Image (cartoon, rainbow over the protein chains, first blue to last red):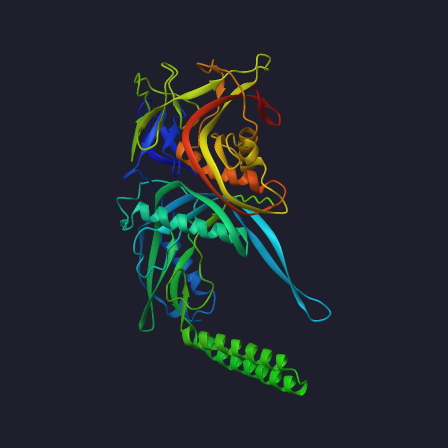
Length: 331
Length: 195
């Protein structure tokens, strides 16, 4: 990502374009090689806020209509406040180069019922760059821990007018966390079930601090307060809490308990009738799982949560932002 | 954030380049320095082109790592260790080798190819004192990163030959890292050695 940082070449005065995380650049006008020193050796960039209040409110209202939120939210939701902030994120690039060796076991059963185990040796190379972002301050109840977007215009022009959260974590912590995650992801990518030897080198390549604009929207529904955050660059909703709809909860309880009970009972009846305990146990397990999901939805469905909240129980948790670099494997 | 013009630590002349380069070469006094936590003047070698080399020439940077190596224990399923054994100069389970790490911007296949090729078949060349106005590919791999990649090269040499590596207990120590500019000829399919 090449960005303009509002700085000029000390030799010719030309505007400087830098890539995120680079500390050596060449001036495109006079060919001078330039050394960029950030605060404490960290390159810092800020994305320009491209959203306004009206656009943020429209995005929030569209988000209200999605999913299983209260159907009258658009009618009864009352906006309390809407304002932008800058949140700091660490952005890291970590290169992983190594080999993971070991074996995979495959089990076969012959016609006599004897089980044989085949051990298949494996050697997998992992060589790729892992990119991560991680919030550099306490996000409080905002439900944001990672960046979802890495494209945008970079400018410090809004820094004076938009409140900025200060970083509360060190660059050493960010680098160490990235190294651990990259090592873990590399092992997962190697897919060697039983490891007998591994040599993995983890090299931190780039580290930068990104200040990213986020709009915070707080609104009321009935007697309770809720919130949402909107990406200041893309205009997408990043996180939020919204009231669920009692009708959906009732339908879920009715349908879930009925279906779960029927499947469990049917499995039991067929299993006993066919003298096959596998069918009975399978039916009971499936019925219990459906009942479990039903309970979870009933218990937590009164509030719909999107984003990186620790207390999130429903929906698909948002994973950390990772750009999958090119991966090569040689067998 | 602060932007400084890079100057030669020896003669204080500004350093110019049309590309981003981590090895700062002063064409005025022929000093090269890197900035890895401080300003450090480094020794470097420039290899001579073969006399009959075509004109489309370019110097490619490599980190040449003089390394001590000892194999303590190994196990390969369906094969046997042989490449490392060929390279070791002293005893059967230890010795010294030069590991070549490409220092320019490469994709991983190119990186592997040149690292393996030059480490397995050590290049022979004569030296010259300057680049003789031949284009020089920029260095983008810092010395520390090259030294860390030495392990990867060693294990790759064993893992990619017949058989499946299951275990390798070894010790590798990099004694010295030196930036080497090797002559290459640019062609349609990439670069080919010009030494």
